[in-house]
Image (cartoon, rainbow, N blue to C red; front, side, top):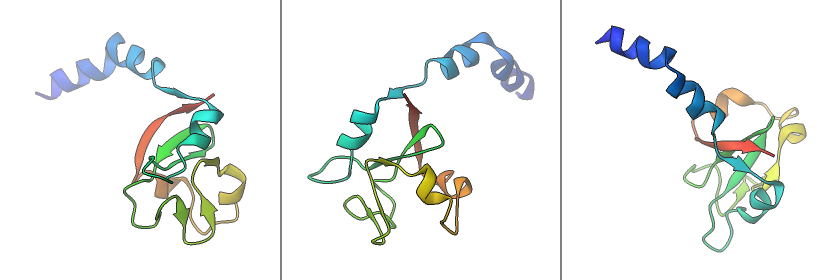
Length: 96
């Protein structure tokens, strides 16, 4: 079983999968702001995450401090948490 897993990890299919990740434009990011039933996307260091289902993000608002639909890289430099918190939400793709 482990041999199969390691072969999958080493395969070109995995490399192709990673290189074909979804690309999100800044306009798409802005449109997905968590308002009017839209999903809530945020960007951090060139990666886009969906925070719609997070209890800390209600209708695109994070505790009155941050809004969805934005690149929060600079804002999160001042936050008490960083990238490790984003591991708990869905990765969507790369910001282009």
